[in-house]
Image (cartoon, rainbow, N blue to C red; front, side, top):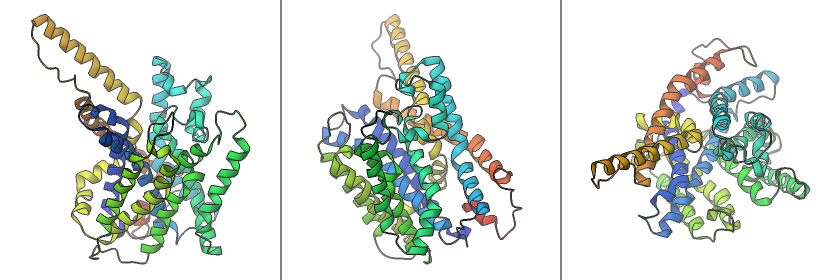
Length: 410
């Protein structure tokens, strides 16, 4: 059976907001150059850990909802894919379309990275194929590379569950998956095809084959707690222990040498081990605490406003870097120039509200969250419900009290 609605944990939705905001900080840590020591700068740059949080959370949620109920039948798989499409695809498609429309007018080379055929690249984006190519992973919506990883997991999850139940070889699976990736790199690293599985760093940081352990950490957590009563009554300290270990992993990556041509300790071999394995385990421990304990941190993450930020965090993640932020940045600079021109005309030496990068980043953060909430309420949530109720892929079920919680949790 599906987990009942009362097992919905608002704090895990709040965690989505935390993860997205950490990624935001990692991308705009440069704005604090003048105010923080180099060590703090390095620490903030490693806040890309939000992506790992997303991956572990996805592994947990999919296993928690489906491990005991999946069926390798056509109807079940179509319903499963329908739920995933409804959740992920509409906003990704619309925002990706926006990126390429923006490219048509601006010719911003960040969108195509020199790829000669923008239409072909767009098709690779909306089919999630660009994430398999090292030279194309940051094109379009740059951070969208992680959705290729997510989609690979979604497609693989029912088969992972099948082999885990039939052969009891759960722990071997991530090893086998990674070895498949290693084989692909050995085969294709000498083929000049836009970096298709072109090197081991790309494999381990940007593909499901290299990052599968993070999802398996979430799956293992689901297998541990799925038979437990999640009433928050445990008096253990796993929430804060896991939370602390997460930032120990951040610190480890922040003190590692940055490989030439890279921007973070993440790309160091031990950084990859720390991020993909030690960090994933720490996040799973943190989640276990949120699921079984009642703490101040859990109450904060469960706050209705934080929960709303979590629900809109998928959109925030997709728009925080790219053409929407560039649009805001352009006007911040323009308004700053206009204000100083006005000050010169008046003969005064005043401060412009747009002259400080850190304040501009904060303003952009607030504005983009507002845009995300609006897009969530006006577009993402209605489209999600519409697709689930439609006959797309499979005829929609009539909701009953028995399957209503299933539809909400799926």
